[in-house]
Length: 414
Image 1 (cartoon, rainbow, N blue to C red):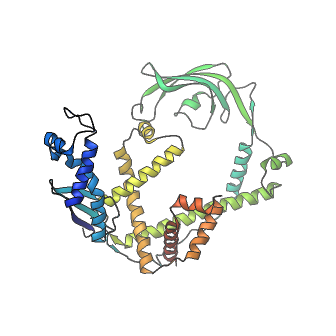
Image 2: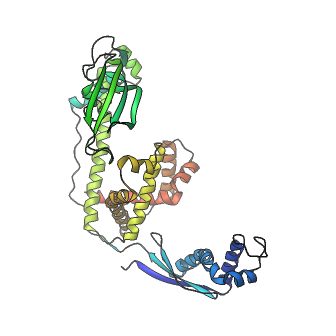
């Protein structure tokens, strides 16, 4: 491929001698030479006993950074992913590296305007508004003890339960005073349905099966749960009265009509965002289909690597880890990377498309636009401008983002 470049760099003379000396200073503190305390052996004695070749690996690691900088400077290449490197020659006089550097692939833009994609119209039905009103009423419902009667859908059952698989207690399958909303589908199929009709104090044995798409070691297996009903609670749904609207605490919402108008506006905003995102996705899909670009596997793998790190950060924010995710889903890192590959390719194509449009259309962003964008976003996120810049990677990142948006605006032109 035209964007794969092999650059050979030789480090020799004083530069290579300095790298070997640094390697020796590290090694002399690690090895024991008879007749010398650790760290006191001379270089000459060390080489006589251990051989100069024993310093080559550490010396090559020391010299490689400057060699790579020189490779980029001499070639004037801009890599888009980590290079691969091999050692072509190494002895006491010199070391020769071969760097394989991958640059941005060749991109041939196709048609990227007037793509014939129509944006959907947004409509909000009376049923959607009513549904949101009922959700609000349910969210503000008071939970009260159900003194008499049996469990029905929508009740909250406070239960003790324990699960058994193959006659042994199920790991993590035991709970005490657990509040379970019946109909929430929080448990495996059949569990919540099996509690319908029970009363406080009653115990029931549920013989169920784990779903076929469950975690690997349990899917499709028989499981027995012993369940005791401790309490039954129900929701007391509030009326749309003065107290309800006061408790709701939404500005300018004082009655049913103003609540419905508020809800309609919120639904419209949400739908507009969804329609806009779908519209943009379809435009980008068409424009990238019209573009010609060949992606190196190394570039794709680099993007996947970034995506995995982003996902790892998201899991960490939720108090979880990749290891827990793999255990819970019965998958591996290879599975995750394979799953992410199509999205990684799409992201790369979109990025190269927009960057190419920026070049083709000679899109510019001035300092004033950058400053305004920084101020706007710092205020939006309640941050100081310096803090916001540190978080996003500086003014260059803002300028790049603004150029991408301008390129997208050109694609959106009818």
